Image (cartoon, rainbow, N blue to C red; front, top):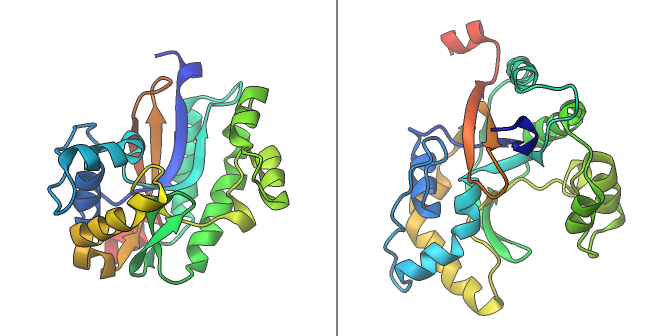
Length: 240
């Protein structure tokens, strides 16, 4: 696949063997590690068609929390260079725990978000955006227009033109998307369905111990996990 068609994103996603990762993949209907489709869950009050429809957008991206939004590689930058930089970057950051999560209404979608602030996460996300900006090709005028909804705050507008995405730095709010856009009538039903499906897993802490590189092979293709990069110095992790 021509490299100029590929896009990359830097994210958090639970390891495939972890409970949240398994249930999250089942909810969105696709395993982002293997790209294998999964049957939509059976939930009281929702048809399979409804669940499949409302999870179509997160299904394409996989179960994840975005740190750096999708980008094309800049001229003179290769995938191997990006991988090497991300591997070394990850070793400089210690793993930390995400506390219990809650269902939030973020604009028109439902998502998971930590119930309390996680300063280590905000610091990590800001460093990902700034340190990997050199790997990002500048946005085209069409891409800038598409991302400028006309509803951006001054901070978001400045972020878009500086970093290529509005919801970063002071505007960053970590979340794991669960649905596409919902109308007000659908919100309550879908929120009950999410709560029923995930149940007590929402209360369990999750270790943020890897940084994931996702790749979109061509426009419109599903995003898949390219590689997981363990955080922390390797000797320390062996004795943890």
